[in-house]
Image (cartoon, rainbow, N blue to C red; front, top):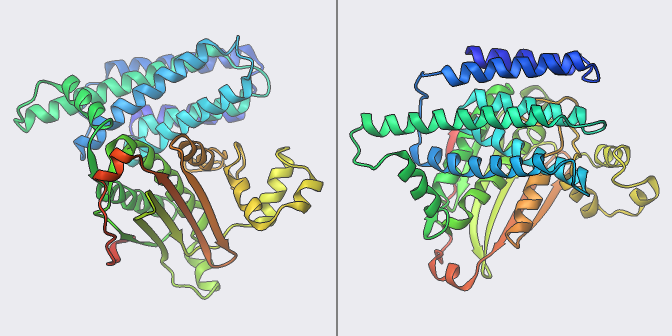
Length: 385
């Protein structure tokens, strides 16, 4: 754990232990953030990069989210929908955090996690824009450091290139045209499952089906975001601990299956786990407590409607907030991202047996002509955790 990560953990602890209604505490937070900013600005250590292409795309998409955050913060005092603005900030920081974790960037994870906590505490009173501005500023500098590290990596490998700025431009263009397969996305999700399982002291086998199914590169980042949040949900909420699995008569290792295939002009991506399934009573209680529905409405909901409550902003059944989950943001991001793509997401769950998320993304005419027409039947176990 490096100095920046330690400082961020200390700052998060301070945030949860002290009232920010005390202006001196707010000043302490800003001073601590400035110290972190100074450390980041003086950092020259090379960042270890394993996947240059994915890192370049992360740089592009994170900058887009930070730009959006800056615009939201600048207009907070004038917005007519304060809650929606805060929800969008939540989603952006949560997604940055998840993608940074996937790439092994703990400093960005820590700062995004801290900012989520700040938003949660202050949304009921007032938001100090200075803290959000400083958070965006520090993450932007971290992204610049990452950019420099990627450029240095290219130079060390003697790759002929015109510099990282061109590389990120290329990455941005690749997000807008052409096709690719889901293989790289699925491989990243297997790696994410491995890390989450290790952090949570769980054992998981991940199987994949349809690795060579193609998709338009314009939706690569969106599909990655969708699967990232679904995978985090499956590992953290779905698959039980080894002890509970043994008590339930299940294998110690949980089972997660990723599938991709074509169906009637749509790209279909599924994530299935053999965990405990959705706790409908707990979902209903949380939904009522959060004011999403009232007790009378809860009685009228069928099973599907109850399951779909998990996509509501701020609804989480987690007992504690961690860097993985607990703030009710991830599944909200899934639903909104799918909706933006014109798609649908369904959830099927059986108590004690597991949960399956099914995402369908429609393809336009040009996209359909480029997507693979066959669905592989082989189910490949990629890795045991």
